[in-house]
Each structure stands twice: as structure tokens, then as C-alpha cells.
Length: 221
Image (cartoon, rainbow, N blue to C red; front, side):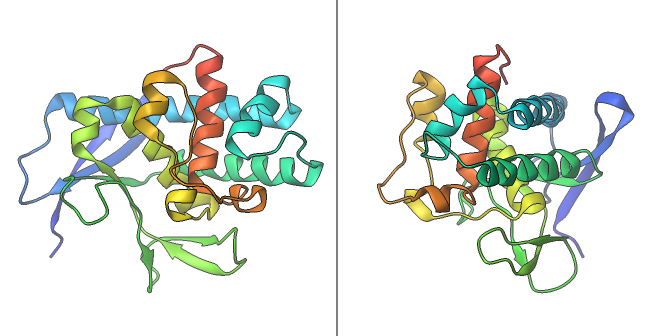
């Protein structure tokens, strides 16, 4: 028996998404459902804009890439890798999927996806290893949905790139100081050591690239 209660939420264009919470937690409020629905809908707009910017590789895309992918002069091949990952993620979140709102006392901090050892998930090719893997549903911190929608949206996009594009994590070298970035715009990774090659497969790099483009264009969570 599932430990999750699911609520079907209609979002833009008549699409429905299952927003779930653990059965041991209080039921989801209308405000939480509305906020998560808006996060998903806005994420589609952000990914679409990042797709357009990366396809033409505009000055804005290049500026965002310098911070997110640690390179001032990405090759055409690297640009195609970035665009392909964005397109896969955009297409993925435009399909029916579950988003599970978790408590922050979870061992993974509330935001995560699981790599499955069965077929119950989304099949994707790992960008780092080139190997197939199955990724479970997206989990987002319920506390962040209630209190920091911008944080929840960044992490939703981060997790969506895992599920649909096969990105990976590199521990503290791959994670940015997210609250500091959202509050001040200052970009900094938690630890040194991420290489440009790793950045091309790093989930936070994609979320950051998309975020910089959209905030610079006047779009906000």
C-alpha cells in the first residue's frame, strides 16, 4: 500500500499533475496546491525561454553559461548538449507526472529523486556515464513550497533535469549556495573543484543557467 496521498491538480492548458504528500503528514492546503501548480507552470515558461535562448546562443545565454558552466567560450558541441538537456526537461515536465512534497527531516533534505532498480520510473540515459537508468518521481520540500517558492522552483527544475535529462550531482562542488544566490544574485559553489566538463552534466548548473536567463529577462518565481 502506498504511503502517499495524491491530489490531482489542474494547471495551465488543462494539464493535470498529481501532487502528493505522506499519509503521516497533514493534508495539503489549497495554498500549497496552488503554489506547487504555479511552480510547475512557471517552470515550463522558464524552460521554454532557456530553450529559445540556448538555441540561438544569445549574449544572455553566454553570460549565464559563464556562471553556470564555468566557461567563457563553450564549443558548439557543448552548446548542443546544454540545449538538448533543456529540451528533454521541458518535454518531460509537459507530460503527466507526480510531484511529492516531503518533510525536511528526510535524510535527503526534502528535495530529491531516486534511482530505481526496477521499471517504475522514467527511463533516461545518464549524461555522465552514458548508461541507462530509471529515475523515480520528483520530491520537493513541502516547507519550501509554503515559505520559499523561488527555492522550491529552483529545486523542482534541478530534480526535473535528473529525471528527464539524466543529469548528475557532484556533492558540494556541484551545489551552489542557493539561498545566497536567490537573495543577492551572487553565484558561488559550496566547494571548489567542479570542472567545465562536469558542469555540463551537473543538475545545479542547468537550474542556475535557466534561472539566470529568466531572472535577467524579468521573469520571477
